[in-house]
Amino acid sequence: MRISFNRLDRSYLKYKYEYDCAAVKTMESGWYILGKNVEKFESEFSQFTNTKYCVGLNSGLDALKLAFRALNIKEEDEVIVPTNTYIASVIGITENGALPIFVEPDEYYNIDTERIEEKISSSTKAILVVHLYGQGAKMKRISDIAKKHNLYLIEDCAHSHGAESDGMKTGSWGDIGCFSFYPTKIIGAFGDAGAIVCNDSKIKGKIKKLRNYGSGKKYQNELIGVNSRLDELQAAFLSVKLAHYHDTVTQRRKIADDYLRGIQNTNIHLPKIREGSDHVWHLFVIEAENRSQLQDYLFANGIETQIHYPVPPHLSKAYKYLGYKQGDFPITEKLADRIISLPLYEGMSEAETAYVIKVINKFNG
Image (cartoon, rainbow, N blue to C red):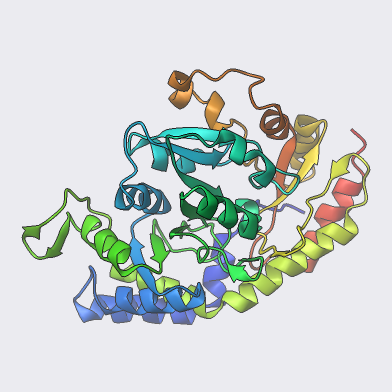
């Protein structure tokens, strides 16, 4: 049996009629940028996240970049960010000239709340939380820290669509919640797409201007903006995806539960679920001492895997100028050498899941 890491076609085929109708209806409308589809999805997604406002953008990275710009984060400002995140989280900070201040993760792969306050200085302006792999960070504690030190709180929810943390949806805790709808995400478009959610009308208004060349009214440019508009076609597809969210997450949780119950190999460290968090399983990440050997073994048995993420941002060539070296963040660096993501996607069959479990349990590396 051969099992791909992901099969996006299965999600499309499951709701093919609805996607095809959405595409044709949009094309026949003759309106393709910032129209009724975008307005509809923005309304639906703000309700979904329990926030007042949603602004559709063309990517999750743009959501991060514009979030910091809207909050006037600039040069010489510092932003607390987890060390073990994807580099996009850090780019959102540095594109605005600010300095990322890294904090190691806890046992659930999210930012360690007990390490945050020691990194706060007079230059700190914000905390960027990343709800990694689909599990919400410890948001009640982080929110308390942000309020205590008068800091902005931004959430990177690229992995955590619909997840709850301490009784609230991810994205609804902070001043701004940033979402990616890259095709592999739980609510994924058929191309690049993203959004910002918030509860402040002024922030919403500024983001809407920034996404459209800094213009709130045609040819009246109040800000130096960008071109970052969620297009009508992707918005129509996202409305379909959102309508089937419950079924999608139910299946992802079933696959994850099967893995958690079925994988019984002492060479494998399984992910933990924090009390107060409901995991939506964007990724199922395990740890193995002999990661390369395990990945080769799985591939030889027809199972494709990926590593999220092999190079921490502080050790990337892109951020060499920050002056970090190997050993500065040992927890993150150890994880980067051990983690491996197993196949988990909508449409994955019980037979495929059972095969992955069977093969892993025979691994003795």
